[in-house]
Image (cartoon, rainbow, N blue to C red; front, side):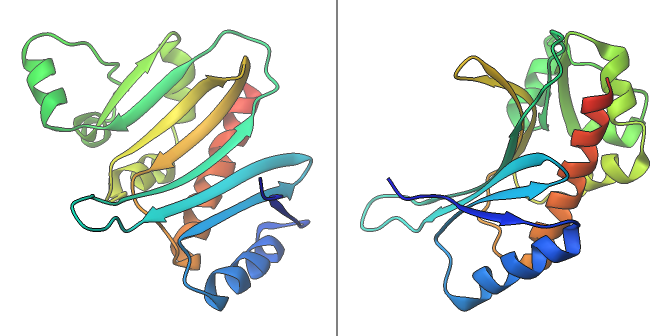
Length: 180
């Protein structure tokens, strides 16, 4: 197993200057790095498999970090798809946050509606998810008995500017979740 590179910086600009160098030096099909900022470790993974022959490929970009909050709060959101539209027609429930345009585009599941409303109270954060052009999931997951905040996009994002924007929103939302 390869060691995962760690990039440490005091601010986002410092960190992304290193990541931008990495991403522009080569064609990126796999990139794994631990980003250390303000006592947080955030894992960035990019995995692009072009497939071959009769095999289809796949692309994925993800950010994830351990959560230190000891409560049982959980939530998950994802882009609404065709099957979700059918499910809603037949009564499937998802949480409505009170932001009409956002509620139309995402499916929200949670055990604490008020906390999710706080997470997405900022219009910039809602707009970020509305503008993602690939399927995604965002929420609190459990991996190896540890709680994590994870954003997964079904697209191999290698453009440093777009990737930094994703990181910026992930980090901002992480700070909000940590406060709950």
